[in-house]
Image 1 (cartoon, each protein chain N blue to C red):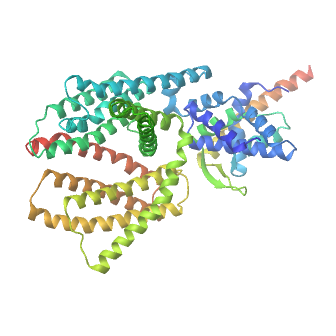
Image 2 (image 1 turned 180 degrees about the horizontal axis):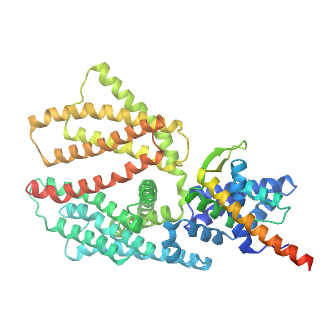
Image 3 (image 1 turned 180 degrees about the vertical axis):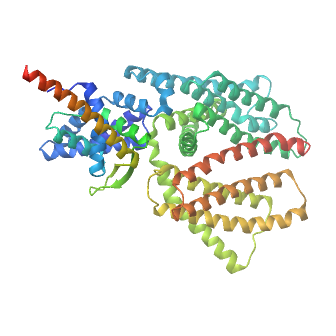
Length: 112
Length: 451
């Protein structure tokens, strides 16, 4: 299934925030995570992910730090901040609202 | 044979050339590339296959840097002004090289122009004229290069060119009486002052920004190293030319001193600037390594000096020459410290070399305070001359700079402040240097009656 670009862009922020709420993570792992969670349907490109991460960082929703991995390389980890948790709650409500509205219309459709 | 590191480096160079990515961004993307590759290799691909696929997956490099530039609003102007289309970057590169060639020729010709009026480069009498004007022959062209590259607005162009013109007029109309101390002082200080002005052209509209000033400091340090290397190359070329032609009894001496050194020197300066600015990653690894080799050695020498002063009970005899020696020591220490600071990432944890830096600064401070106490004691006894005041002033400005650095380092080690504070102090302190250089170059001659 081809997910539209607009939908991918809109869902990026809540997905990233939700993943970071679980635990701190880095770009590559986030992409893999999203891919697995969506059953290989949501494939994010790096050109999209990193700018979003940086924008969230600028908005003070998340912060980053460098940590050495076992391979000896340093990775840039992101972790969620207080404001990010709040934003996530807000987004959750909005998505639930959209979701419930959509499912109602679809239920009606099926009944016809 | 596929060289992975080489390929990754050229890939990251390409990213860097886009101009929208910071070094940390590039490192992050590079790590991503390596992660991707590791997974592919685990699945049975060879290194080069994995590299190709990972690069492909990371997407169009220009697209990435375009996306980034949208995020970092401070770069927005760059994004708007510089067309990020790929074919254009090739065009820009060609344009830059052409500029380098033209400006080198112009600068060299400018050096030759005074000869029309009978002021010859190799004339003893004109020595001082060339000495004090040296910076004016080259730095305006370097500034012009950056003005074109950064597409500065006319207001800034006017201020920069205005300062150059002002300097050129003032230093040449000032009278000079024997023993010409103030004229020599002007000659020494004008280049440093003008270099800082060139820095404004280098940094562009963001010249007040801490990051871009740090870039300028890094740029300065690397230019010094590369400039010396390239100039050595030209000297070798000159010596070789002379030697090989003397074998067939042709004396190339006049050609070398009149043309090769003049045009070669100007070209060396322009090429250095171009290389340091555009081939960053080739250069970047070099300066910090030099600093890391030499900072322990300097520390050792200075410690040995302190121990000798204490054991022998000798106070350093302060002549002006010695004071200049101590000024030089402070400059060297500051240079080493800055090389290390500029090469480190802001987010890094305190490392061995940060402690080394602090030790280096503290030792320099101890030695300098011994020297200063000696000179202040003698200054009154031997009278005031412009040279002494200039040397003393330099010493104090450097000293305050280093004291500030030492203090901030201490605060940093006890986790009171972020590393960025150290950079902010250093970048803000550039004002002090610009002002002091201007004072010595322009006001000293007036204060001391041009003698």
